[in-house]
Structures are given as structure tokens and as C-alpha cells.
Amino acid sequence: MEADSGANAQKIARYVLTCLLIVLGAWMLRHFLSPLAWAVVLGIATSPWYERWLARFRGKRRHAWAALTFTLLVGLLLIIPLVWGAVVAVQEAGKLVHSFLETSHNGQGTLDLPQWLAHLPMMGAWLRDAPQWLLQWLRQVWNEGLGSAGGASAMSHAGPAVLGFGIAVLRRILTLVFTLLTLYFVYRNRERLRVEVPLMCRRLFGPTVERLLVRSADAIRATVDGIVIVALVEGAIMAGVYAATGAPHPILSGAVTGVFAMIPFAAPVVFFAIGLLLFSNGALGGAIAVVASGSVVLFVADHFVRPAIIGGGAQLPFLWVLLGILGGIESFGLVGIFLGPALMAALVSLWRGWVAETVPQAGSAAGPDPDP
Image (cartoon, rainbow, N blue to C red):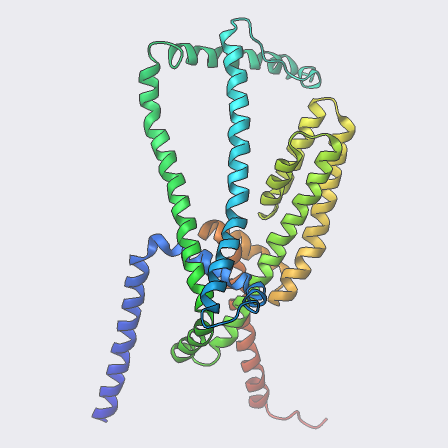
């Protein structure tokens, strides 16, 4: 009895020590949890493609070279769109600033509303005068701040904001660097991780945990296919629609539509805004075509394509997928788009396992049905 109690005490102490070490390690790495999570998501999502890529390499260092080159490819796929979008955004911002400076230096400069907006009942007169109020206020700020001797003082007040923006950008760059660095080691050690992770989880939580791991990995892959790939297709289709209707910067607008399409109910914000822009420029047919095409594409993607891909791959009803996406975004940020459905898939798998274990026990406890 004393030996059994001593063994139990050691087992409890070992589990307590394990939990404390895990909590302490998570607290120490709390600022790196986001890149670690992104690396795990990317590693699981791209696993089928990486297996085909790895098959092209031979020799003792094949895993290292395959991991390095594939990580560089993933990095290029992530960096090039961001750099291109930033360059286009800076160019557009420069055009807006240049236009405002020309207007502000001209004392009689005006900002004209579209005719259809200026003639709205009750609000038309107020909207017609509002741009002039805005222009006068901006001109006053410019003359009293940047456009006069007080410009140095204004710039000194703007310094902390610029510094904060630069720190935020640097933090995002470091997050991307650590994500790619972690992703390289995930690819390189994927065979060991594939064996060791289930083994350790099985030792800690029992054999049923393997089903949860499989369901979570399948949910991440299905979510990436259903969210990212479908959103990219939506953005490509809408870019063609924008180009056909004469919308400004159709490629950039299509890319923005694709990014917003990854977030539920966000894509209409983009194509409705572009439709409103076309309508304000007098292109009523183009505006109707953009809104109608965007609505049809979004309806088909959200009600047929995406539920079939995500629900089939994750074996999860799309309602729970949607709740997982929304809850994941609110709790974990952008990476929650993929972690949320994985968590929901694990919970649903756990629920189904409990039900499957409970139903036979309930049937056996009830005994055979009595004869009529």
C-alpha cells in the first residue's frame, strides 16, 4: 500500500511538473506563439505539395535542401503580394497628397461631388457644401501646421506616430521571418514530428487523442482549401469583372476582394464600394454588373463550394465551421481563421467519440427488448 501510494504521488508530481513547465514555456514564448501557430498551419496545409516537392530530391541532404527551397517558395508567395500591394498603396497615397497640395495652394480650389449625390432630397444641399467645409478645414490645418513656421512643431508631434508605425511594421516583418524560420524546421523534421507528436499525446491523454489530431489536421487543410483557394478564385473572377466594367486598378481591386473574401461577410464591402464608385462616375451599367457579379460569385462560393470543401474535408457541419472562423478571428486574430475550425473539429470529434462510447453502454444496460 505504501509503495502504491508513493508511486501515485510520484505520478501526480510528474504531471504537475509537466504542466508547470508547459505553462512556463508558453509564457516565455508568448510573443512567438503567433509565428509558431502560422508555421504549424502552413506546414499542415502545404503538406501534400511538400511531399511531391520532396520526391524530386535525392541524397543524404535531400530533406534539408527540399525544406530550404520550399520555404523560400512559400516566402515568395507571401512577400511578393504584400510588397506589390504596399507599392501600389504608396503610389495611390502620393497621388492623393499631390492632388490635395495643388488644391490647398490654390485658394479657390474646390472639391466637387457627383451630380447624383448633390441632388439627393433633403441631404443634397448639405452634402454639396460639406466638401468645401472639409477643404477649408484641411487647408487651415496645412497653413497653421505643415505649411507655416509651425511645421517643425507639427512634424515633432507626428514623430511618435511615425515611430509607432515603423515599430509595428518591423514587428510584422520579424513575425514573418520567424514564421518562415520555424516553417523550415517543420519541413525538415516532419518525419520525426509525425511520429513523436502522436506518441507524446498518446502517452499523456490516451489512444483516443490520435483521432483528435487527425481531425484537427484535416480541418486545417480543408479550411485552407475552402478559405484561401476559394477566396483567390473569387478575387481573380472579380478582377476580370472590374477590368471589363472599367473600374480603376482592377488587379489591385481584385486582390483586395480576394483578401476580404477570406473573412466571412467582408467581400461585399469591396465590390459594393467599387460599384458605388462606378455609379458616381456615371457608369450605371458597370456598377450593376459589378454588384450583380459579386453577389452571384459570393453566393455560389459561400453556399455551395466552400461548405462542400470545408465540411467534407473536416467532417464538420458548415455552421460549426463558420462559428469556428468567426470565434477564431476574434480570439486569435488572422491565424484564428484556420485554428478556429481545427478546434471545432476536435471538439466535435470528441463529442462523437463520447456518443459512440455511450450508446452501446446504454443499450447493454437496458438489456434485450421484452417479448411482445
